[in-house]
Length: 323
Image (cartoon, rainbow, N blue to C red; front, side, top):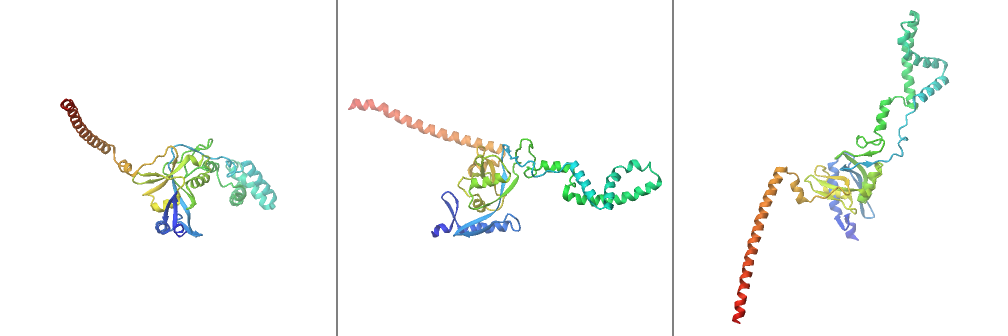
């Protein structure tokens, strides 16, 4: 019991000492000092539980499909006719003095360019005074109406808001089909804990953005700056592995990729990925030359063995005759 209480599980039959995890966690929180990526920890019945935000980078090649069931529920601006009628109803219920000023305000705002050259001087003086008073009334009316009717947003702004409704990191997608491909390398985050396995983390991420695809279609990878790529197993605990890898995302990142398109890259292969093509071609030439030398050595060796065997076979009849 003491051994299990002093260890933290990071995968199937894989454990790390609690002291090691706490040491890495301290470094992790120091790195993100003053940021919302700091992690909290507690112990429940001797088990260490860590929780907080985990950054996950998008590495998808195929589009994903988003849910559309709340398409018309989140933002639904009232039509212009309804807002004007509600304004008239509010004006008619107000005091007589304020209703007259508020009713003439739209007329003054629309008609002055046509009425000013036709009216007399007295009417011009009155309209000037009305314009000054109506301007203040218009501002007062708009401030009061915004709270009830939301008239401050223009139609263009409303279209932008509707267009951004299901966007991820500000990237657009097809609004009619809800098909979307996140930009490669863009980052998002999810709130998880150290007890959650890889499928559970994937489910939280998909639910956050209302993605209809199944969690089984995706996988999490640890992608290192060297090019090494390690796929997290279904029994792994991503948050603990992230802590052990260190906080710096320039060294290691957690990527979301397709289950069938993602592939692991070992450290030996990753060493050659960063080189340019001429350098890699020179490596291939060197390896080819070394391969040819080894083939020649084997050919000489087996040719010699063949010569010895044939020589012994030629001597067998003579020995048999002698016997």
